[in-house]
Image (spheres, rainbow, N blue to C red):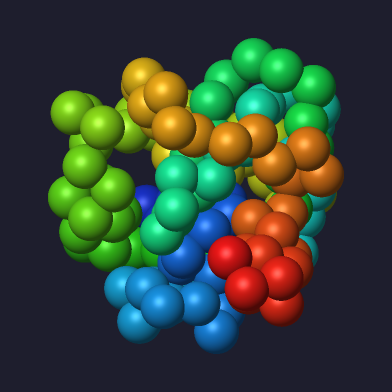
Amino acid sequence: MNGVKRLHRVFIYGTLRHAQRNAHQMQGARYVGMQRSAPAFTLYDLGTYPAAVAGGSTRLLGEVHVVAPELLVRLDAFEGVPELYRRERVRTAYGEAWIYVMKHVPRHARPIPHGDWVHWRGRAAEAGA
């Protein structure tokens, strides 16, 4: 099967999601569907973007997309892999997907208990934060 590109699934939970400020970074991706992760993360609000950390009991809400290898390389660069984030595997209803998890959480980070950063940011905006 020479010349066949291996596509990848990615699970995105923050600014890359639809209608978020960095959604344009997903140009060329194919949206598959919404998904809740297993309860295996802690999600933090870092102000302008979220960070998931492996470990914890939060089920993240995110989108699953299928991307070409070139887009995955661009997403790695955008997410600061390997300095800031690393890629890990997560199971989804659509098959295994890559998820970006932060390596070290800053002290100012606030936990998001329900695992939905978009909803959290919407509520913060309504409250004037």
